[in-house]
Image 1 (tube, helix red, strand yellow):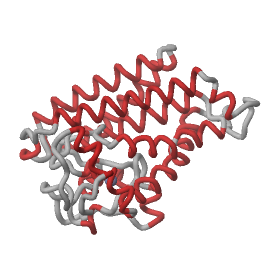
Image 2: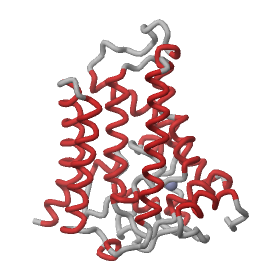
Image 3: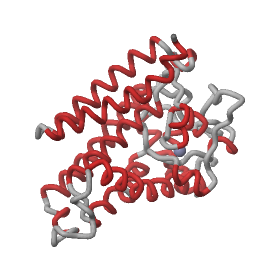
Image 4: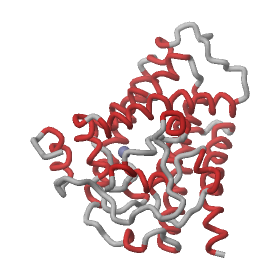
Amino acid sequence: MRQLMSYVWWPLLFGGSVLSVYAGMRAGHDILAFNVTYLTLALAIALLERLMPHEEAWLANDGQMGPDLAHTLLNKGIAQVIVTVIVFMGIADWMAPTGDGIWPTAWPLAIQTAMGLVIVEFGLYWKHRLAHEWPWLWRFHAVHHSVTRLWFFNTGRFHLVDTVTGLMVGMPVLLLLGAPRDVLLMVSAITAVVGILTHCNIEMRCGPLDYIFNTPTLHRWHHSKVLAEGNKNYGENLMLFDLIFGSYFNAADRRPPADIGIQHEMPATFLGQLKAPFTNQPL
Ligand SMILES: [Zn+2]
């Protein structure tokens, strides 16, 4: 039964959340639906992590809940400010002034969303890959990788600079192409749902979905201390560009490591972590 359920969780939680946001959007309450869905999903994951954890050891307190929450709130706040500025200053209209850009607004929403995901993924993939392969960007991304356990609560633990550079390479491209609000919302919702699922500590198997989406299994490899495993699976939502550019990794004969983290020191406090990339810490 436990094994059967492990195949059910990802499609159920992903599909249910995406449908919930879509239904809310149709009913004219898109932002509310997104927030309610995300909160419900987080609570469901928190419960399932206790009931059927992937790693028992990751249930133990790592003393990082304070910094995890502080990074998450700071990032959400900044993202909110950027979105508000884009919406209220009319930047979206300014970027696609005629309203009839090259974006195929008449196509079915599912196709437009899939297109949006692939386009955004290209920027996100390369940004994430460079964040691992360029020491200067790694300093910032290391804050996210310094966790010693994966669970829903540290999904949003990113250095502010890491978050802002990520925001710059994704959505603006869709805005420039004239993608409508519904597509932006669906792409954002899917990114948020995939993101919290990739970090969750629930025993899940995703079968062939591992070749399409960034799943918890693939992301656990990405958090490995072993560089040959960790510098792989850079996709945010989709594995398409990992498959194309040769960075896909999923060992079939063993589980991803429980002992995760980075090879250098990371301060334990929120402010220390914000300052760390600017100091001469060993890389
Ligand atoms: Zn990473």
